[in-house]
Length: 101
View 1 (cartoon, rainbow, N blue to C red):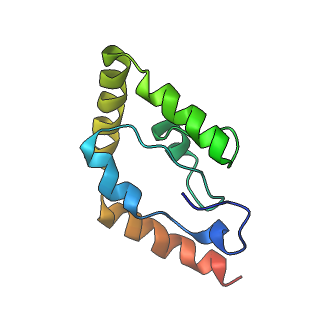
View 2 (view 1 turned 90 degrees about the vertical axis):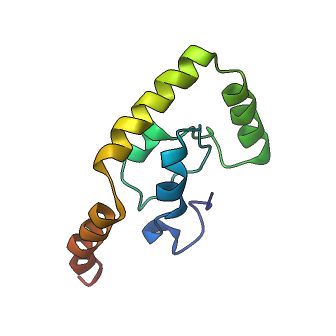
């Protein structure tokens, strides 16, 4: 996770997410301002960017029932089926001119 308060992180996209999502396992991460809001639905995001809050989120994820874990995996599977590196590269190319304004 990248702290959202660090200057420059507003334009960072954590590309590792695209590598992690196909595993269909819960992902705990912060959300940086440059990330698409959809990722909030796919990640377990601590309430605050503190060690204590990350720890609480880890305990929550570890206590998920097998049913909830399967629901999460199903949601990720549906997302991954439509999102690829090609898709994200196209989104970046479309977004890039906005950075130059």
